[in-house]
Length: 128
Image (cartoon, rainbow, N blue to C red; front, side, top):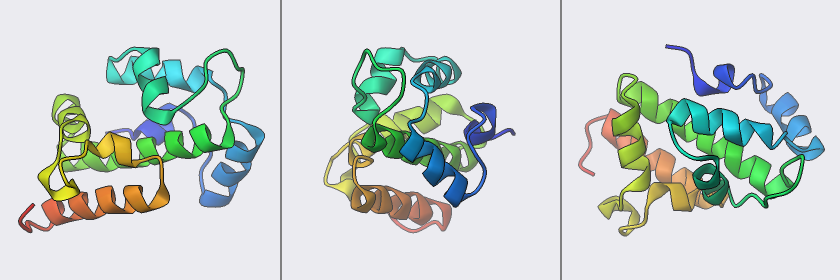
């Protein structure tokens, strides 16, 4: 199964991704991801807090976009490529995360760590 990071042709390696985010990821990646997820570009833009009308994402939106891709790749692996299951988990209120929707926590590094921790708990069969 090809990972979203590869499908979207994001740079390999943390340093190169860092440089790309600082330079401004192209807003066209939002449409590309929307197409992969069978969602609207407006929905993806809302998830990553991107401002419409720009050619490149802000640093903050680029960071959240990369976090979203990372979490989606982990969920797709966990759900054996089941996009519907991965998106449902990502967008449904989660008891472990104080009934927050995991996608809403990706705006901060700490929120993203909490989401990763919940995914790892599922992977290792811990109660969630």
